Image (cartoon, rainbow, N blue to C red; front, top):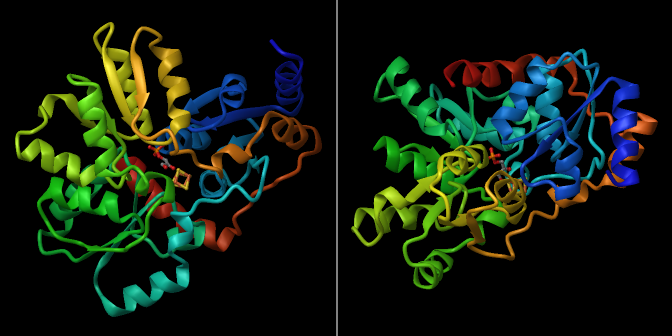
Length: 317
Ligand code: 13P
Ligand code: SF4
């Protein structure tokens, strides 16, 4: 193991820290982590870990979620400026104003939001369970329930199509996924006929892929709308020698290729890199573990209210 990675592991042991890393992290950061996963799996790990310290290799809202779920643990983020353009697209004040216009509506927010926004939310969702959570709400609260869904408009449109109902959808987007356009998918279909498609529902191409399927232009069996964790599950079961076009942030190539070196994973758009995720580097992780710097602590009054929608989501699945 290279010296810096060995130093990080030794510091983690010394501090009693667990290192959690998102699938989009730099390969060398993923390789020193105790657990690598999608945002749902990372929140579940943060909630159940027995370690005193959580070194979170991801972006700020993810570290906040860890702090909300494990208020007595120390959560460290190696670069406090690692934000998220999607989380920045709605503030708590904007959400309060939206709610005021729709009294009685239920608020469903993607986990890519600040803790303050979650504190104004009824149910959280991630890309792996958004459809399931919205279906649960209609079952439990009635089919005419008014839902304010945000902040990602592409995920919102995908959920509406799957569930077959209209919601009020905020017009936020992740700049990285919004940049993966329908034209990227058409180009890939031409250059890799017969390949499977792994598409993150935040992508700007997600609804058009569903339209291709509906029109019979693309084989429904070859299209998989998945969270990053869902892509890993797909990879574990995929036939040997397959080719898969991956429409999400390019960091995802590393865990997929590690899990299945025999499969050819191709990025739908090679420019789709999240600069916030890439702000977390091994030297910064080493410094944070050594100095105990980069503490993320959500104030208890906010955490108390933000915990409820996350726990409702985790209980549903
Ligand atoms: P996942 O929940 O699929 O890991 O996605 C998180 C994210 O930030 C997508 O950009
Ligand atoms: Fe946020 Fe997009 Fe980066 Fe995910 S990829 S952390 S949604 S900016």
